[in-house]
Image (cartoon, rainbow, N blue to C red; front, top):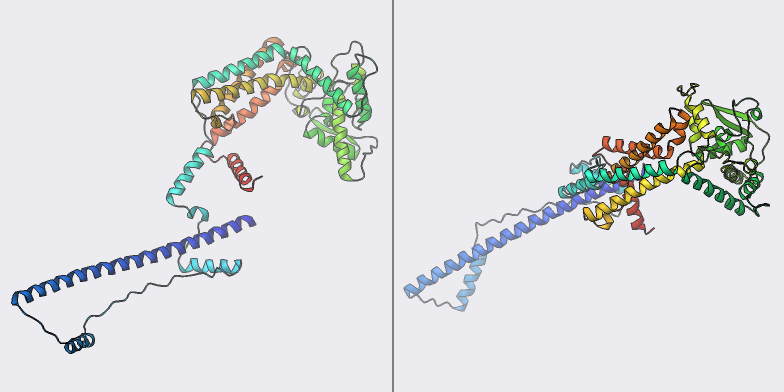
Length: 500
């Protein structure tokens, strides 16, 4: 607020200076006009005098008159001309003095002088004094630039844009149907499981793990090492561990019910809170449940160090769980194991509404059953691949079309989502992906809600939802100022001026 007032004072000072400059220019114009008028009168008088002298000379010549003037008579004649009375009166129109301001005064005094000057000359400061500093042509140019560069525009896609976007979405949908499928079955899902195992092993080595004792047990050994190194107090596995406070909790679903096991900001917050307060927070049938745990002592000599230790415990424990448990992965017939949920997936348990399936269960219960079937972070990584393919293909095709079909410069072909046509194409592309994904899930699920959700690509629907919100906002606010674009431009200009 103080900065804005200071800028307003500066703008008002510039307005007063502009008024002084305009007044000075007006005075100079008046002086120039007066000088031009005097010069013109003088030239007219000289011409008249020359004409009179020539006429007199012609009369004298015609009459053969010869003037003989003695030198003393000439002196007397000149004295007579100087002393002779005249009826000619000069008119003097002095210019008014300019109104000035003492520029050597301090800032508060200078502001007072500005106000007094404005009062004397009836100057009114508008709500936006900077706009008054611009000329009409400058204001028109500024309004045009704001409209062209900083206003939210509706998309103007042609038929080729829609065809390209739909094709890109169809390709992504086919990749989802053919290579993702249900958790742990599709080629991409198996690839994501292997990459997760490798990430767990690399993280364990970074923290001092020396490798497995037996070949083929690498992941189980790394998980066991991390479980011992990053212990936490909220790792309850069953309903019995919570004293019956959390119903129907087991080793296959305790990661989704425990908020501290969520790999997002919510999980980080509750993990650090639980480690500090010796509590554990769970979600069960739409309710947040908190229970007391054994005393847990965080490392560190001050609060900052303890918070950092809590964060590292949370992160390390997530790595120890994202590929299953060491006990489960160590068995001969071990499956994928129970990993950690996708970011913010645990919050779906708060939607305790509806009645689905044969047993008429609520949505929160269905979400837990879907997680128990392997719909975890590893499967989320697999589901993100067709979404990424759709995103990249759409952006690449937009760049190619804009460069070679519309013949735009390369600098105008940067695939920014702020471009309305690209934003619409991304919406169509991801919408097509979701349509293919939903159709496949509906046909293969046979009406089973759990099977339907297992085959549904939640990552694709999340991306489509964010794009849909942006498109609705753009359609509703078309023509209004794009604040984000203005902020980005101002940040870039500030960086350019400061050299940062």
